[in-house]
Length: 282
Image 1: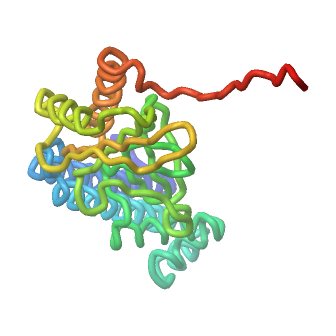
Image 2 (image 1 turned 180 degrees about the vertical axis):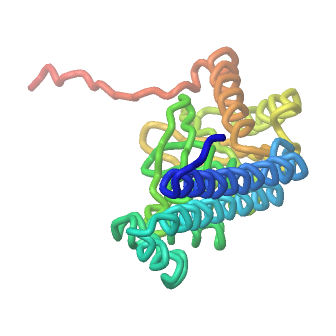
């Protein structure tokens, strides 16, 4: 019969305890991910009017990150407490004042500030998952929110990593803060002889033919500027989200330029000059 020495039995017991702690932490974190997946399925963010769904998904993801962070710290503290020599360190972790106090023992001040900023962003929600933002001149869509940084997917599929502290400390544009609907504009430079009324009718015809992009709410064509070389026309249109707004602007710009070039080529921008003959007597 195999007999275990007291030291060997202690090692086996300690190993078993550590494995149980790690498995419990892993199971808890996996359970949080399952709950998050269920919430994302319940609140679909792929629909056009997805403001509430994006808000719920953002909060759930942020709280999942926070709770996972706490679970990891607690698991580490319990594992440390199984070792006699460093048990006091584990007790100190459990007795520390709150999550921020525990984090200070493991991270630098800037890391703690990023964690706290992540919690604040989760509560105040200046940005949400799938928001369309412009940060430092980069247009993109919020792809992921972690506890310390934001992942923004740009139009050319690059990934912009933005610290949470930046979101709170620096100004940026959020095009979908309250609604996904946007207004788009197209500027057109033409000559003074351009028949604006006919261009306005052409714009309406273009929009009516683009029912998959235009939401039918807002449109218009105005003369917004006049200079010594010509006038600037601004076409205004609305769409349900930023992607369709961009496509609609490109379509309107292309077809208006073609319309002016084909129907009114004399109305294209031109530079006028007057040449007077020299006085022969001089």
